[in-house]
Image (cartoon, rainbow, N blue to C red):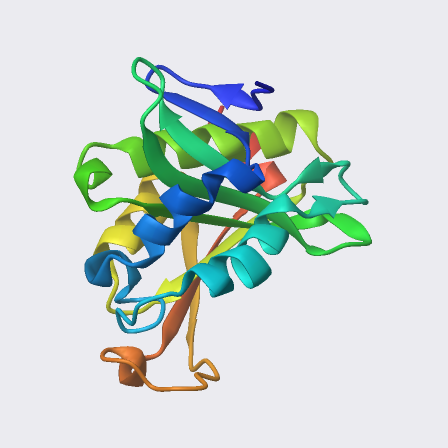
Length: 186
């Protein structure tokens, strides 16, 4: 198994087609998905035809994937995923940070641990100049992870939601971390 990163408690590795069942379970937890799609269930077909191809995509500008399966280091248990992907496949300088963890992983610091490791990886190993992250304004837990990972609030905005979900009426927020700020904090 190829490993991108290991932290004290996590292993981040590339996804494979064998991860479909874990992804299906993750995307079918209404609480996990409440800020993504309002908690609606996901079909196996959607995971296989839409989710997995996105997670398996290699970004030519960075020579890497943008999504990583997260496992507990000591047990190998699937916890969810992390994202650090270029916003534009031709430019590795601006990347989006994201995460989706299963409910048993919440409140244990895994999201912050994995996010910090990926941010550091982006600035030390990739040509990243800016890390950005977005969430719904009402998603306080995700906003706190962004802050603890070194990102700062940039702006509030109104997204284009195909279907409104509870909380979307409050808009979204964007956080960022620039290389110069990351270097200054080290």
